[in-house]
Image (cartoon, rainbow, N blue to C red; front, side, top):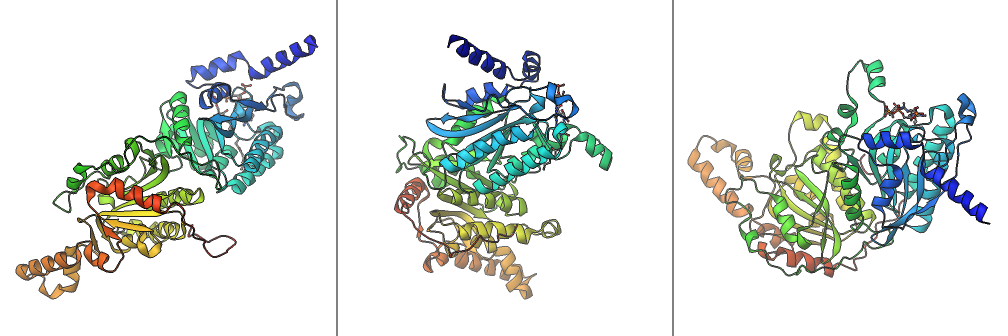
Length: 510
Ligand code: HXC
């Protein structure tokens, strides 16, 4: 018996070494941890249960029959994060560059199937060179099966991708179909085709970082939801992130112990809005002052800064926050902001996370660049996402809510449940200057008359009361009492039940 036990331990030791000490050292030299080191940092200590440690590829081309490494380039299994079960796979770059073979794909598929069956999140850690070149179409088939499972699991269990090294070719599409992508700065990059192919096809010379580094995907492409300085920071932040999410679409997100008084008054909010309506202020100050302990996990911080998205808690319970940011482009809605927020609203709705919306929006961004870029369709995404969402929706208008953007930003008309406004709210078709120049065009040039019309417009329309008189605003609230009012509204909505008409699926304007 002892011999068998020894053999098992020996086989395990070989598998744990992956591609060998030389390649592990090379991995460390690049500032990256190994797949197993990453897993042990991410999961609760000692909770990892590995599957398929001894799986090997079956390729016999290009001399591959003489080159087999147990595990075949991906470490898979399950464990817990802050006590909750998650399934995960971590590409092992030390084994054939983490490339995907038929058997490697089967290991990932097993994890995806188990996660879906048992309703727990899947986390993928990517550090790989794409399809195992020696396997040809068998690798492509493997990718296809992984993609299919990503699609089936979408909206049922959270799927999160962590890009921690190269992620090229077939490896990019699985993350792209998951809910969130996070990267490591300087050591990770994602692209469909690498710099060499780009040079051959388009004659462009570009570095891996400039083609698909974190600086590209968190700022320009919006592929990634966030980036961190190194593996350790990313993995520790992901442990924090997981606590905002439920395990599936039939589970509730964890309720964390809360010591922050839900009725806490924030007197400083009474002076947050500047006297001059054209002067910006930082919407993040409002978010931080309203949510539990000021703890806000922002997503896509560096992309479309005119809208803010992220998770926070009220009374220990997860909420999704969407807010116009007057500090960036006056908080205007453009194509990027609309797409960013629409996707976030849909995630929250899939996983029953209530949505809190803070509105200060001067409208949609005019101009040829926006119109040619499909502003109508992108704006409609956000409108559609809010309108179809059945989760509790609480909205607060702090200042401007102009034009179509008023309707879009979780208004009463598209099933906002509780719609509040501060006394400083201005709800109108447009600002006073634009309105007066259109309806009193004949008086342009007569400064006194224009001033009179402007004052009259401001008095009549630039307040929350016209909307409140119609019931479009449920209540005009005191800024310092905002946390209390929103917390109470969410408690009141805790058992909200709304069903959309039966359909195979909707047809959101993509
Ligand atoms: C087999 C691979 C591999 C691959 C890397 N390796 N990529 N083996 N298939 N796709 C192996 C290398 O041979 C090497 O083995 C080890 O992994 C480390 O690779 P290096 O090149 O030494 O590392 P590095 O210099 O860090 O470069 C990493 C890299 C590069 C940028 C990822 O390896 C690379 O460009 N690989 C190919 C990328 C690619 O074109 N993949 C196919 C995409 S097509 P040894 O034994 O020396 O350690 C695709 C289509 C799928 O994925 C589409 C589905 C929709």
